[in-house]
Image (cartoon, rainbow, N blue to C red):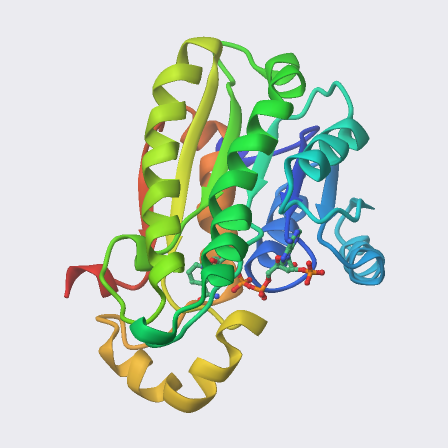
Length: 252
Ligand SMILES: NC(=O)c1ccc[n+]([C@@H]2O[C@H](COP(=O)([O-])OP(=O)(O)OC[C@H]3O[C@@H](n4cnc5c(N)ncnc54)[C@H](OP(=O)(O)O)[C@@H]3O)[C@@H](O)[C@H]2O)c1
């Protein structure tokens, strides 16, 4: 079982206070991670998540609004020089509106958080990731993309393009950082329960589940499993991959 063990590892999960980020933070701790920093804008949410996660291991709350480079730098500083074995760039936001009404602000909000933040944060944390990186056991960057970056959903113009860009950024950084023993991969989730998806799943949950080849939506263990795989020895030769965790939705 040591193939999937994260014993002794330190991780940072952005947006780790709820939804997919919380599923991943919990999974990392359950796989043996020694310490997981959980970050989001709201200090109270960070405290609450850390408290909940402390049932599984050490969780450290670090509030930061990473939609600006300055805050990405501050978060990186709070995490320190490492070693940081696992960085999960998960925090994200979406916006939906008809083409003619789609506001400029919805481009800035979504692209700043979904695309620029993973770039700024990964760059700022390179010293900490390098401190964890070895040829046999690379440091890991896991970007949370989306099947929306692979498929062509309507009305979420900035979201779908920001996610496709994150997938491409993943491949570019994987090539550049591989020789430094840092892997960069993306997980492209299909539908999972979260605040972001709450209204959609309430209105169309059954229809969405029926459309998935596996006939259900994602469960917390599905997301934790993908992250643990990529973060553990089991995933140490995977680099530059974009892995849909979607029950086969992207095959349609
Ligand atoms: N759920 C799905 O079905 C699905 C499918 C595909 C991809 N995804 C991706 O999975 C990731 C997580 O989504 P989710 O569904 O779990 O959404 P969620 O429930 O809305 O969670 C988003 C997380 O990001 C944090 N956050 C939002 N804005 C932030 C900012 N400016 N700075 C720092 N943290 C911020 C939120 O906490 P605060 O409000 O406290 O900041 C929260 O912890 C996103 O990248 C999303 O695109 C989700």
